[in-house]
Image 1 (cartoon, helix red, strand yellow):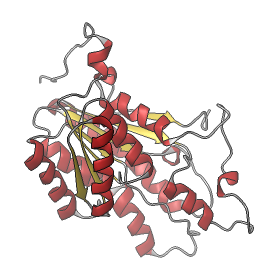
Image 2: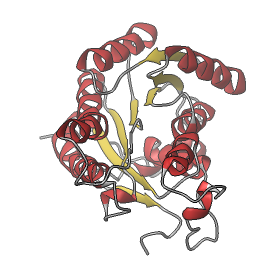
Image 3: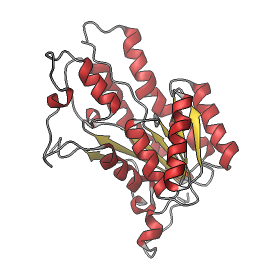
Image 4: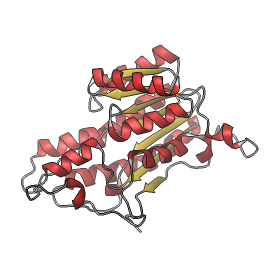
Length: 269
């Protein structure tokens, strides 16, 4: 069996980092971490599809990225819990650009519900996005990566450990996403497709701050104050994580597949 991964040891650093000529899609990318990832992939030269539940916001984000970096962009409406929606979004990219090279499964949900109060439906809703959505995104992108590519799953440190009370479904789904990353790498390597995970700890995005604010906090408490800075002395930023994703998407990481990189400011040290 031939595994189609070139030895790029003689390539200059600028070529290894460049994504020129590649076509990427990032889920949940209208804001926050997904937007930061899409922005860095575009800066590296990729054509970028911004996929999000909110089509109008996806298109607005795509326009901002195009203005910033002068690359082709596309706003795509996508519900990652829906087979039809993911398939249609991937087809939109194929119709627009004729191929797909990078897919980032970033969309996620993280409701805080005590396990004794959680309904089966609430559990299923979390897994539908955080685990099933990763499977569907990987499957649909792999079917279209006829010349190889990279699939990157945003896993979270919750894929390595337990976290706060109320996050059983989130933690379980992220462990599932990390395990799926390993299995996908085995199955897709013969097709020239690498699969990597990136595991951030808490990053102050719009969604994370809203979730923290919705927790049971004393009146007037800053939601960010409940998340302690880690070994580097500060919280990670969306762009800190986006740069790790860019490394995974580029040929700098060509020897890597199946791994989940901890981008956690020392959280799990």
